[in-house]
Image (cartoon, rainbow, N blue to C red; front, top):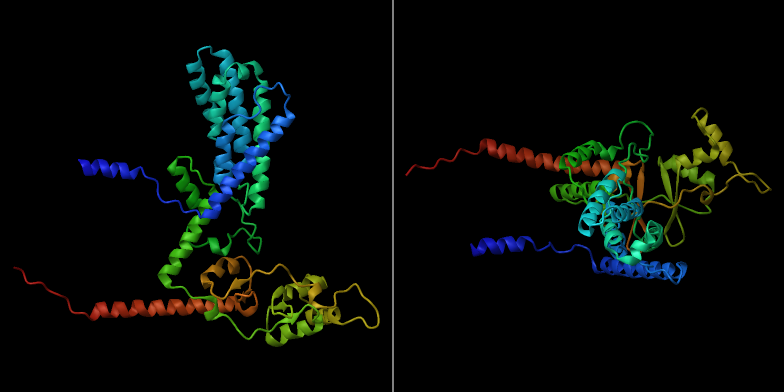
Length: 411
């Protein structure tokens, strides 16, 4: 019995926190910055006789906005819509119901219902509704002005500080709460899903599971989908091994510099049958990439008739005079460039290639070009890996087939 009780008590202990020290410090600093700025500005704006200039539920909102900013409960519409609707309901209940306990319970229940309908669920808004009912004479004397000041003022100021602080410190905020109906990254702009999403689970699968789960999750849908994708990729690497980029990349790279002439760069593309050339500075750092599409786009070509003739006319330099026409690679190259490190797993490049990239420059620890992984390299690496796995499976099948059955004598 004692072991059972001890096991039950242990089940209440939270799992170890997975965020690092920097993330924890960032959350603390954000809450300090947000509440301090919200309080100071509110105190400066509101009249000196104002009884309340900062309400307690803002502390709970700060926990969400700065500690878990990816949560659907911490998004802009959640804090603004949730706090304002809860304040309105709380003030109305305080005026219409004279029994405080009943008014408080009714305000909380109606506020939750309103937040579900308005899709702005925000837990601190329950405290806003409760404050409107039980806040005492100072709050009751404000009446419905309590909704505008301090609730709306505090909420907007805290939201603005969260927008600034989270993005300035490297976080993405706010998070989209809508499932994408069409993947804009699909390179060909057709109704087909992007190649990377055609295998594994589909968006419809995730939507169906979330609907059947039938509970509010404290994580945004796009984050949940990204976590599943990363989990699938990690499981694939564990199962099939981890081939690094430096094992499959091309090392003898044909490259150009910023001042390389367009005619020379085009001739290199043609001679080596390449799709792209990395553009390097003198320290072999990648500063851009020039592709066949860059040439076609600059030449204003919409079709491929008489392509060579038109390209040659575009490439020919204008003698003895300045021309607005691009003359060197640096004027038409694409930037910034998507790159990877030599020790990165090849599987990490699959989403990039699936989104339309044909080649990815590979850099060393000093960010210098050491190789290039193309779609052909990817196909060869994955094909070789599958061949090896197929051979292992065939050997296992043969060994199983020829292995004589084992009998155990009955006792």
